[in-house]
Length: 344
Image (cartoon, rainbow, N blue to C red; front, side, top):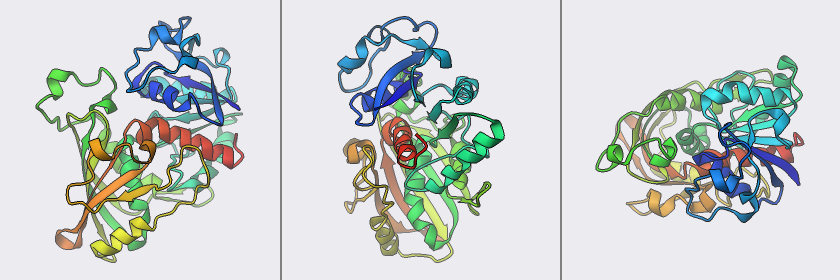
């Protein structure tokens, strides 16, 4: 078993890491790290468990430690830290020889840090050796993208063969994406909030890096632009996106559907990998977050309403579980690929 620590273990994404790693066949939780106010206390005492399952018994009595490398007994750490804290803390762990699989946004766009979706761009792991050599680190950092970006890019990967020219996307994002105290009930009930700080920029820039080409030295961004409009809606879990895609080859809806159905990234038998990365729904009113967010144990992306739009555009709707596929599950899948490829 590989010893695993979780940084930011008491927060919403940190709790999802705990849930998904509690019975993982490859990783054993050996350290739970959080703020100084939680350090020294039992995890069961300080974690206000907010998931729809019971707190795993095996972690209740683990003593929480501070987010310092000397305090964490692990080979790999999964980071659920806030971005402003992750900037320095994740680098401290990488310098100390840890593998850091991060859900934080702090290092995603740095040129020598892989921004990874295993089904989309596993070749970008070539940046690891460049990162270690450049920074003279014994460890390294690998990141996963923004929660909405992951779902959208998963559906765009099999459509790249049509020569994508531009993307417009409107998101309807669940409240859990803002953390437990991120949006007050008085603000979100009976409401839609048409602004999520930094979200649109992340979707527009991360997509280009993810779908770019690794030339052996760096990632050359994909040659198309993305325009995003992001909204918070009163849904607990599951981000929904309406996507408009224009491409050079002007595929028909049937051609797009077939490309999505045939998408087979061949990751092998990884514990967190779903049997189908993309599930295509034919019903006119699907996908829906309440009905489809848990497909593939929360790791599949569901697509529906594939149709022709104006000016040769293709339109469709996609959804995925934002704290599983879009956060903790994504980081864990990244770590499984790291192990498979010999980085762990």
